[in-house]
Length: 145
View 1 (cartoon, rainbow, N blue to C red):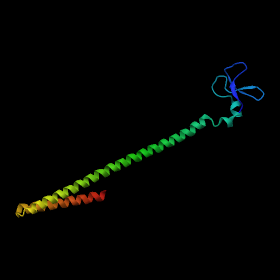
View 2 (cartoon, rainbow, N blue to C red):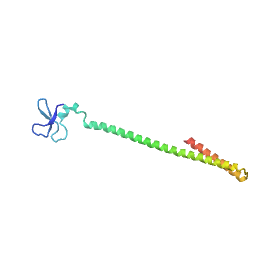
View 3 (tube, one colour):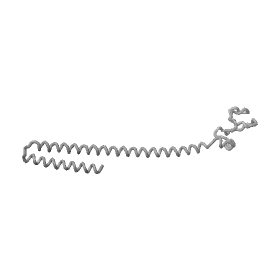
View 4 (spheres, one colour):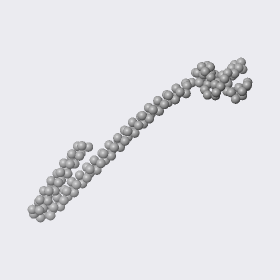
């Protein structure tokens, strides 16, 4: 590519290319918008791809990255949702375990009184059924998880 600079002839504000014999050729159009076709044709390899081509290429790349980012955000939200549901189920399972233990403790306390009456026997039967229900619910919730 030939050296580029301000014109030494005529208008000193024009940017030109200097030829090997000292000649000048304008680089930009007279209105100042865009390069001369002769200049772009002559130096197309040195100038590289057109701005529109680069913008289109990077625009496509940016769109792809934005799409991948949106997909990743959706997956992250889904993972957070699943984790929250799993945590909720774990808390429910812990509650069932505590209820089972509490019910068993009440059964043991009534049986350790060594007083046998109809009310105590009925309460023990009721607590055993309650404990069995808790265990069933616990197992069902565990299977769902």
